Amino acid sequence: MPPPCKILDLGTPNDFSEIMRKAGYEVENTKGENLDLDFKIVSNSNADLITAFEIFEHMLAPFNLLNNIKNKKLIASIPLKLWFANAYWNDEDDWDKHYHEFEPKQFELLLNRSNWNIIKSEKWKSYNPKKIGFRPILRRIYPRYYIVYCEKSNQLI
Image (tube, rainbow, N blue to C red):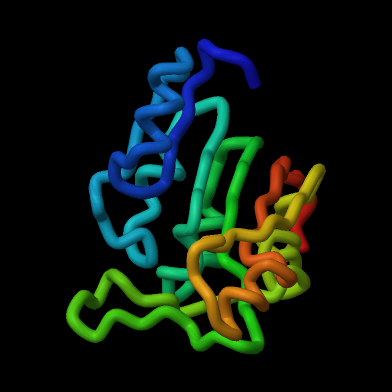
């Protein structure tokens, strides 16, 4: 969607939400509320598009939020579960944990069950070419992130 378009970006203000603003989009961010419990921001939003960049892995129950989104368009990305790396877990900050690291089929099922139809998807690799070792080599081979563009279905599953 070209600007000017209203975007609700799930997550507190970040570098990418600022890039979208500079590109002419009207961006509203969430305020740090617990999205596992508080769905008002998505059920009351009049945005043209919801974006969720690496948010769902931090939620205990992302289905509830996805199911309560009233908007018709969603772009979401997640880090993929990798067989050679454990889920990210920060012992000092409760909000900074990955409760889920999805395989693509798991994320696709979650979206489908919450009435989202995937229109387009893509995986990509992310690695630091200056790092050496077993994991850095594997990160050059295996995709690390998955992004989807979805539209809300009217049918109940």
